[in-house]
Image 1 (cartoon, helix red, strand yellow):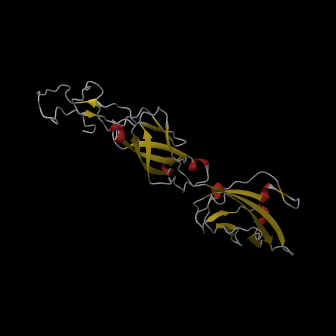
Image 2: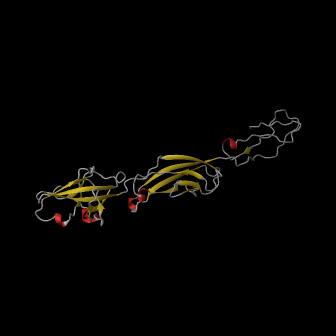
Image 3: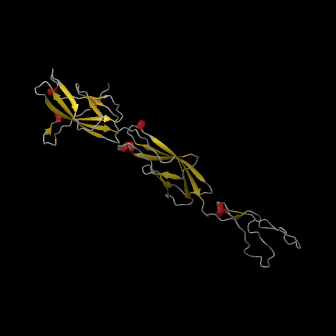
Length: 293
């Protein structure tokens, strides 16, 4: 079975027990275990102090019953420590076990205690996650550069800083200059230059959230499709596209079509609807103008 002996380290310190008796550095051992370590594997063949390993000694190893933890088991004959349940850094990142060594070579048997301090090393086993798969956002044209459009908030369930630290980026699906910027750390989407609905009606973006695991190959990400609709404001005036000249014979019948006046407005909806009115020159009411056509 694989071993983590290379991860073992011993604290050079003295730890006081509740009863006041100090624990020497020989009685206190420290281990670091990866979060993805599999149950039934040997964590470490505990390097017990030499006075425990004298030949022909009958030793019995056990974990103190008051340690209410089911993640670890110890071989009562060899002192090998096993993982019996999967670890989850986000649930518990540190364990302190009390191992009791009973020496039956003496009469009566003698007990000694070793404390095991076990730290769980976080693995990047969670991916960033957006709450939605697709969002539609509306923003008015001609808003100032730097206007807040939306704030993205992806979550990552990892416990350590870099494994859960998220960096945002965006790509524009349709070709052209991207009119938006995103803050890599805070996910704030802002306008990069003035928007003109008459030139761009909508923009399709892909927003990505990637964690910052130390190893690039371990990094995880999630993506979100975003449609930004440019909302129209009444920023254009109607313009006439028909001729400004018309000819009519005298004595034509009342109701005769004199001229078709056509004006256009590039704005959208009600902002682009045109109505017609005679402002001057028709004092004797010789002409009638349909305000719609």
